[in-house]
Length: 528
Ligand SMILES: [Zn+2]
Image: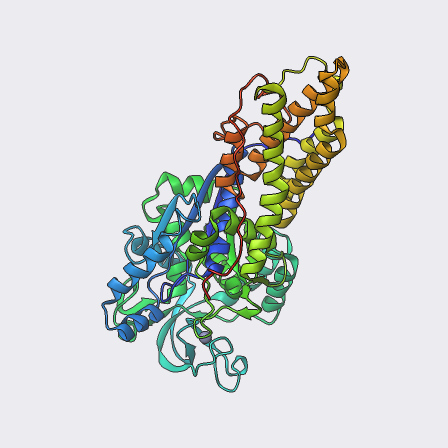
């Protein structure tokens, strides 16, 4: 039997995207992964906070606004709303949606972090000349460019020649190596940890942390005491994880979820890992603040085998997918199909077949069959079992072990493994129906076989309890579907439902069976 983990605190953060374009399915992936973790930790009783938002002070936003001929405030407001509006269709439970250009806590917080680094002697001014890719918002060394172009955007970087403030990253090289090697800062999965250690071993150079205000038309967080400069957008953006907790005002939230919390967890894409594993912890170390405890890195989603990009026109809109196929289908596909390492590939056909096979056939039919039989043979009332020998030990054992496997898998950010454990239980329950043949027990019972009567009670009670547990285990992954399954067996999920085998439902009268995961017929109406 699994030991129940001791409740603790858990702060989970998505990265905050630039808002110069529309959200795509990759953004939905990160949001849904974090939401699943947040829901899971609430379910096991942890004091959980789920943070997300948008990064609005980037030069690239300014360029997008100028291109459209609208004020920058209008552009970020409109585009930020596109990300914020994920909440309902994706069934997200974020506690905050933080905007770095409008939240009044952000500028003072970012400036306080800057001053703390300056006080530590880690900020100095120097003349700098370099190749800057505005869309990456970073400098490139000549040897990092491909044919003098940005390796990611295939654009010619801008030659920037100005006086900037620098951060003494070089000072933290040994400390960061030690923190990552000892897993005090746990970088997952393993090959990403190795990548970062190799990056440190090549030597950490001080980096520029400001831009001339003029170049950014004054858009951004002013450098404290020097209005001619604005903060480098990554420094301002990274600080959002603590400014949103009220770092500058000593809000109790900051103590609760950052200073005193043993789990400060980032989920980021593989393209921005360096900012979260190197730059961000270094800034925090300089400011004498705790660093993140975990940075989990996810890979990219490709669409029909190609990397998602605006220029390819393959930016699948997650909200359109929810409209077409429903929330359960999209969330389930994202969590079930995205591999732990290596890119995942989206296609409409794969999403539809996953949904139809797993949710429709395996799970939906199990619920439907069990509840229908309960109505046919017991008038919809869950039997109360006096003799435990008529219960099935194998099913109970499998069900009893599922919670622990989920806990371990999610601690390792392995959503697939967690779902596989749940499906082991679904499969076992379906096999149980096939093996015990309740319809034959019912026939024998009707002919006067008292033992068959008792065994039928046992089988039906086992199945209904298994379905109750499935609703609990599935709640973090497909919350809407899980709620429907719970309703079907007369159960209220509530905040911290019982995750172990029980007789909670004995004696309850269940509603008539109705299909929970109606079949999706084809992708013909799917958007290109
Ligand atoms: Zn670039």
